[in-house]
Image 1 (tube, one colour):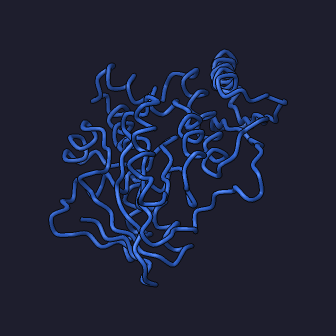
Image 2 (cartoon, rainbow, N blue to C red):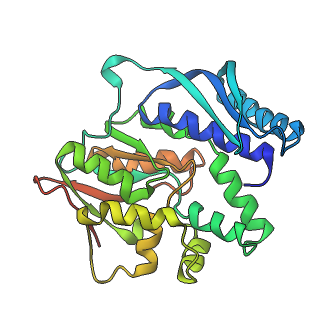
Amino acid sequence: MDDPYWFGQIAAANALSDVYAMGGTPKTAMNLVAFPVKQMELSVLRQIIQGGIDKLEEAEVVLLGGHSIEDKELKYGLSVTGFVHPKKVLIKGNLRPGDRLVLTKPLGTGIINTAVKAAMASPELTDKVTRLMAALNRKAAEIMSRFDVQACTDVTGFGLLGHLAEMVFKSGRSVRLFSKEVPILPEALDFAAMGLIPAGAYKNREFRESMVLFDKTVNRTLQDVLFDPQTSGGLLMSVKASQAASLVAALKEAGIEAAAEIGEVVDGPEEKIRIE
């Protein structure tokens, strides 16, 4: 992401997402900055900070201040504090047999960002993906609170399968994933087929491949997208089966058009993810 303002927006959205994923409401934040003052103009930092501030205002979160250091590499993030009732905290490891899995954002941002770096993505696609990454998970979290969701995580650097593996491992359950139902940016499939795979996707596969079982109908390109590291991805929820369709419908009605039911939780101590 070359645009400093959007860089700040995306970083803030990504930081806020952790609180949304636990069923909480973010309230305050502090900036954390490392900046190469001898290599970059301070105007770049101002734009980054402004992007973060604008995203916090959209989320109705108060910026309390922050910390900054000089560094050779630019880094920007936020420490976010939120509130949630102790009995309503959502954790990863609470999958229940029969529950359905719902995802709120499409996959493929890591692959497309690789294409952007290679100057192979159109300005229209770059803008589309930038806005997708900067989109808050606030609305999805608000809708989620109205349903019987007992487990949730946000999909970021470990990719869909990496974060799902965390849920499986911590709950002692297994999962059937319906690959054709997973929302994916179509351009990501095209770039993946060309070999534009970020290094993180290979690391994600290597780390979790012992837990993942692919059906022979799931080709390598699709597998790569399922391991693709996301930046500020969507929420992955485990919801009671009887409420899954209503949850997806509510998300779509609220403008979260990519929301989809992508799998189900099955009983058993295998701790495997089977992709069909």
